[in-house]
Image (cartoon, rainbow, N blue to C red; front, side, top):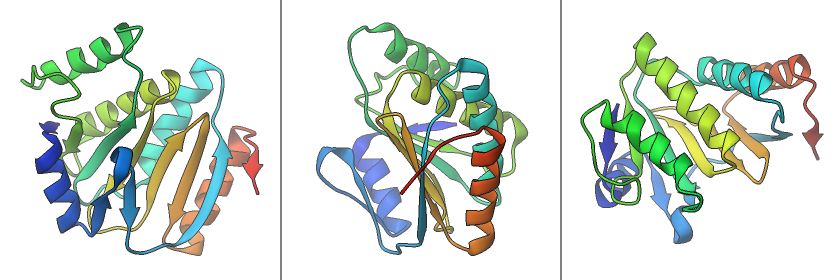
Length: 171
């Protein structure tokens, strides 16, 4: 994982065809089929859900986590994420380098990716999980997840995951 400053993240996302809008929200060029689910509420199902979503997102190119909103109090959730990031050599505060870029097809990176996704859900942060060169992405916010699916097959996979965890599909 490599942590990227705001401006570096913004430039990288622009290369991927994604714009950073107000309040760190992202705007995508291509709208695909969207499915919105209520996130799991219990820790263990939430962890397994995070792992399934990390598997659902394409792994053949770089993946990116973009926290859009997080609470600064209590401080412990942010400190935990920063401590994980420091194991990769980045000691800057999350606000200075919010973007997290992950190597492609790397099992350890995939586990860290799903772990940070789990923590973001547990801490009720909002943010995006994106893969370079793919229009599939996830946006989590307010105990919900919105999935942008590039194909009907990818949408069917999300519905299967929703069924596995008995998650409510929002209309």
